[in-house]
Length: 627
Image 1 (cartoon, rainbow, N blue to C red):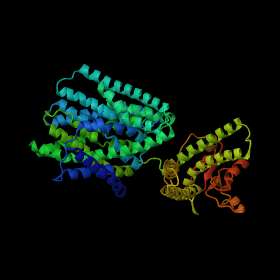
Image 2: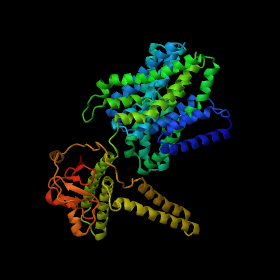
Image 3: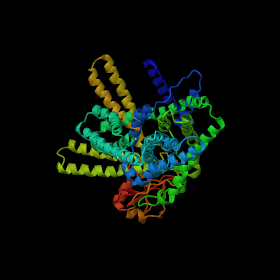
Image 4: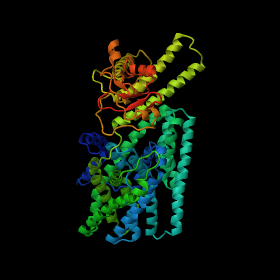
């Protein structure tokens, strides 16, 4: 293929991927599923010729950045807390599925057990992208998502090691001792190189404040880990994942804010294009794989029966493994953690969609392997069937079983809890620094301190405002954001006018515009103040303080339906709060009067409750905890 054709093909794939996203949002169908079906349809067009998928393209070029982008965003504490069930899924389940599928294929197809085991290794690992994309869209519980994330990061390494062993057995080059040694080198070497690369990259980030250099290092990091590991016959996949976990965990400490922002934007774009492109590539392989089986003159009925049974075996193996482990592992209660319900275990079992690694790795099986074309067809069928059958029915299964996460309101409550803690910490540090510098020497110094104190409180109030129901007008933070965005738009237009007039230096103008862009991006990233619908069982549980425990079950009669102090002073409250001890109704801290806070300082009554319709969360003013 000429270079121009390659470039045009890449452009065409990117265009298709970009179009699939809004189509998926409008239709409610995941974009990955749309791209898979579209790819299958395109592959059967008579004027379309698609080259066979090169496994090196996927395993060396596409897979490392996808895994790295996922790993750097995984919570290492969550990962460590669930390491045992994650290993059972990513290692035990993959091996179990490989042998179950291998035995089925060995029984149904005239192939050796080594080739059947190779097929089992190929279809063993669920795909990281498919499960996570659908799971996040459906709002699955945090623990289920952690298990899926952890499993999808590590299971490819297990499958590739097992596949390499099976291929060696096909060529009669494997021995029990060699297999054991190869496994130790693969796992141990991958972990070691991942840790070393993660440490070295973090060290580079501590030595430079240059955003360009930091971003450049980030972009090559997946291959810095993958290539050396593969050269010593260790697991490059495992090395990339470990490096990503180490770097992501230390990024808030060792990287500058601008570097983190730049890398976040770059990796979101790269991940989106690569993750969705691979599903289109999967679909494009359909025509030539089906034609290959047809040209080999295999019995059509028995071939298709075999691949369907293999797919059912893959699905059944996951259910058997997860539910056999359910009572002993996934359902076990751990300190600070709720049990995994049978409904959640069912969803975890059902979320076993296969992806591009399955289709790429099957082409590593030697071409002279008997019935290789059927093995490839089976890999394609398992991949496509799992994406379409499980992917399309997953929303229905989740809704039917009622497996949902904490909900939007609960997430905002958690965010409010975090921001409030940070606000208290920031105020404390501001007071310490001001005290260390001595009493402000002039009014301008005091004005700076007051301004920082006000900004700190505004940031804390902004999240609380999203929990309320604004009946008259907008919340202050929303109004500020809307007005400031209009100001920035006018300021940018004026700056561009000055540039067209050539009255200022262009480079200086670019710096000013960059400052406006940063401020605008920050304002746009903040979610609009909106009215949220009540959600069932939507509360945040935190460490309980004595004041919250003491007021459990209290239901004081409100002394009024409005903030009487606001009415007496001619002020308009933003949201209302109820004192859990005496029933006083006052306005929140986003209101001009801040009467509930004044009531707390005067009365010492610690716990308040939201007095807005459909809300029942409580807040302790003493311990700054939410319930």
